[in-house]
Length: 197
Image (tube, rainbow, N blue to C red; front, side, top):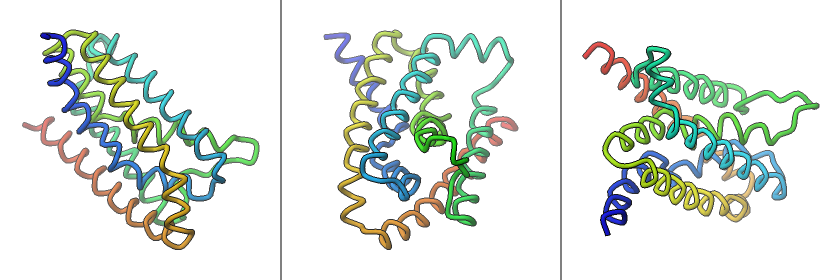
């Protein structure tokens, strides 16, 4: 019972940090030019990347931070800066990244969807904080459950894409980019406040 109680307490903050439902518009905007068969591959790459990064952080994140002399605030500023650049680029050019013809579109699943969107500074910070409170097995199970939920939500991307059609998808894409820029600024602000506080 203690394990289940701790699991419940760990699930909620990770769920809020992953924010799968809130991330869905960004997934749609980043994959708007892809076919219905390409989108699930990109999402699969994103989830594998997110899982691998989260797993690495659960195992050795604290040690890496200590060895490199990094603070969580540094991570927030860096992650926020990356998201801000990507969102501004999309607002200006209509594309998050410029892919060469020889590079597979699935690379978008790794960056920016897998990280920093699905598992970025907010999730990694939450994982590190939860490890300090609960045991690693509890945090790991909570993280996996949240990723499984996120995958289930992202699997609806094709259905939503058909529902919105091209014009609706592009309009949603621009709004999502603006929101992503705002989130990025918030992350940078929080990081700076922690640095000077």
